[in-house]
Length: 279
Image (cartoon, rainbow, N blue to C red; front, side, top):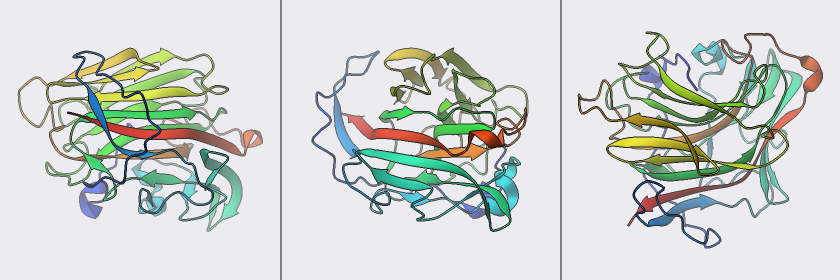
């Protein structure tokens, strides 16, 4: 999420190998936008059930609640609480709510595929509708499973989609590495405008290969990060990563212009998550 999460080094949490059974609904199979290589579906959640997110595919990340996730976030991420993460009517709903809860003013959910879906390279597709409102900070992103090169940002971070509510309709993709990160002022990122991202579903896509990764909205390329060939400090993306879906409230970036308490509740609604790898 473009966040200074140095405590990851100590907790060492996130990603895994593994693949749940692939859904057969994800047809036709996509083709890599740049190389035209065919892809095979290896993991998906179509959210065609009711209740909590599938425990075989998702876990709840709560380890950073006490520290504001190193980023001064205002929400408390809950675990297995339908109010904050619920599947119904064919969609996953991640809900940010204004309420008094364990000493916090807001609750939300941060879902991860760690140890239930971890991948090295591939195409990740997430079809989602985003929450609006000042103070909202939804994100679709990836973190390393094994932290092989050390704590953040040395082992890397890939932001497929971030939006902050005070900057409406602007979608941001970023790479974070030891060489390129916002702490140093060297972060690599780009932005695009999606005028109906709050009212309509769009597919947020990562195509990740050994030489580069590319980020798209609805197959429209808007960010490319290349492997310079200079080693892990610039390219730590040769290890397993996992997916994260969450809504943060406030924080150094999301709350830079305050939080509008009148907008709650707000939801990020996800139609599907699909992961493909190359044949």
